[in-house]
Image 1 (cartoon, rainbow, N blue to C red):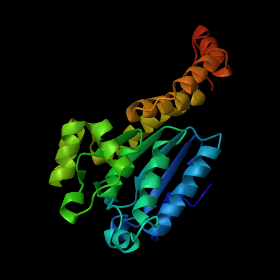
Image 2 (cartoon, rainbow, N blue to C red; image 1 turned 30 degrees about the vertical axis):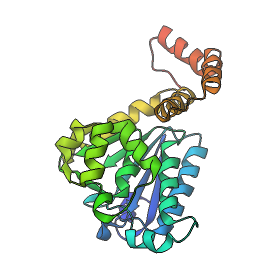
Image 3 (cartoon, helix red, strand yellow; image 1 turned 90 degrees about the horizontal axis):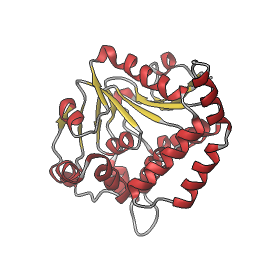
Image 4 (cartoon, rainbow, N blue to C red; image 1 turned 90 degrees about the vertical axis):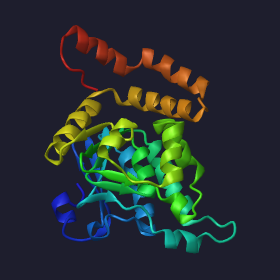
Length: 263
């Protein structure tokens, strides 16, 4: 097991990983700066995603932050300074982190312990589910800063929140609160702060109990549908393989024996 979350609160560090049973938790851990992401954090996050995906015991990932905010996004001064010519920029690196998270082979939950701002709004959208406290807020300041956001982030806004909501958030740069975040579909669920862990636990336990290969394949197909780029042949192959695979056999046995399946 990695450094514990109680230890994490003591010092500001790059993101931390904890694995407990079938659940992995990645915590952004720069609370004095509202968990603003730095260049080294992007590299660390990609490495942690690889470790989570490579561990067969992990069935679900929870992404969260330390302190009063989930994340204040990325330092735009750094992005602007690095974006010279045609060289890869830090903005491109951030896009790569969000895309990698979106495509992670295990289901993901963003535990929004507070506000989420700038690029981190896309990081949260890249998760499969977002559970937030009722005091959460968000804004996307790209238009106020003269930044044309990267295309895959705009796609996530459009496919998850809808055409009109994406325009409202990107073009106005206005801040919205948790109730509105829930209404437009940014939040999967909104809870009081004291109920946040209970709701995250509830969903994480449901996901951890389901068939991992079936979930991974269906998640991939759903994401591909959203991008308008479904690999029909691969999806059909996964479907056919599932019909004779060990997961469906265990699922059928468990139903016949009236017990929870053990995948």
